[in-house]
Image 1 (cartoon, helix red, strand yellow):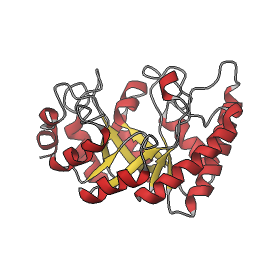
Image 2 (cartoon, rainbow, N blue to C red):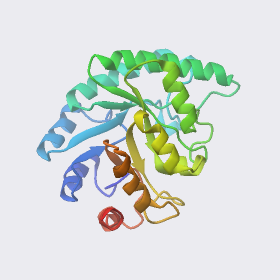
Image 3 (cartoon, rainbow, N blue to C red):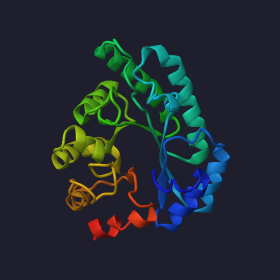
Image 4 (tube, rainbow, N blue to C red):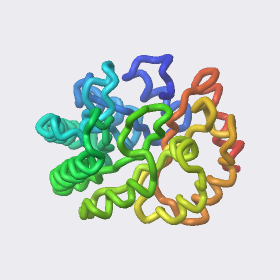
Length: 250
């Protein structure tokens, strides 16, 4: 979502110049994995995360994992994600739950999601890769199957795999449930990656109602050791909007 004023491959250098040591993005599949790996090496960047294939994004598809009609396609996507991950050195893959098909019973969607997560986790384990699931708010993606942190924690428990974890997006969870500090503290053992944006508008931290100064101090206090991804829409250009980093963490 940052540096969108540049082409995809140009963003890596811009991120490094702006002071970032790591990057994430939605999908690498439109590019050759070696092209991306070369940019990571050139600019000495870690790749923290990318998504498994999520269907046809241009048609509104937002993941395949809860759809029993798409199990074969989901499994093929896991193989494609691993082929990229091994070249790019990424150790976390986000598995998007998807939008549940109309008339599909919620319990069948849940069981399909769990079965697909087990498949993905087993395939990723040999490569030392964690599979992450992320609750996403139902305002931005109506019908998305996974929308609440407690729902995600229960699915992780029922999945029964040691390398399935929670990707916690503060923006999404503020819109769905609030109670951020207590929820993050309670779920800390499950959280492997976090993302930030403010609300309303999904802009920079500090631009809206979320008390990010408090939350960043809390994350230090409770010992969160993962990365924090900047998944927001800059209001006036990426670099111009980066002042929040010092303002809210100093």
